[in-house]
Length: 92
Image 1: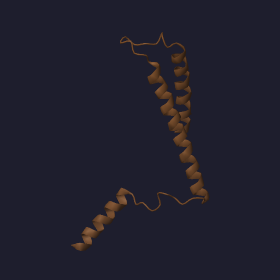
Image 2 (image 1 turned 60 degrees about the vertical axis):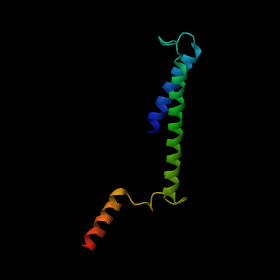
Image 3 (image 1 turned 45 degrees about the horizontal axis):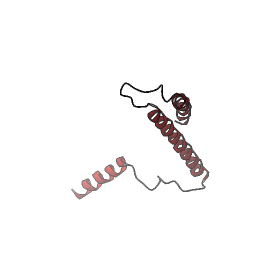
Image 4 (image 1 turned 30 degrees about the vertical axis):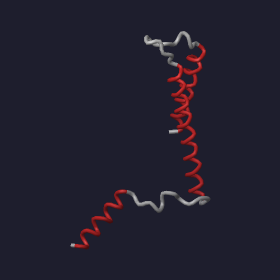
């Protein structure tokens, strides 16, 4: 995920730089500039990259035992459904 975000951010930044450099030339038939949308792509993938790095740091900290696992106490939906079915069978 991080590699894809880095590559896409790199491509989006190049496209945004070209679009910002030629603002007058890059407009659609309706006359709206395209550079704001291209800049938002770059911003979005940059945020995705930051989120991926954050998750990686958190997972490493959990594996080293520096922080508790935030997902340990939460049962999955499958486990919750199985428990519900077992309770329903015990009642009958």
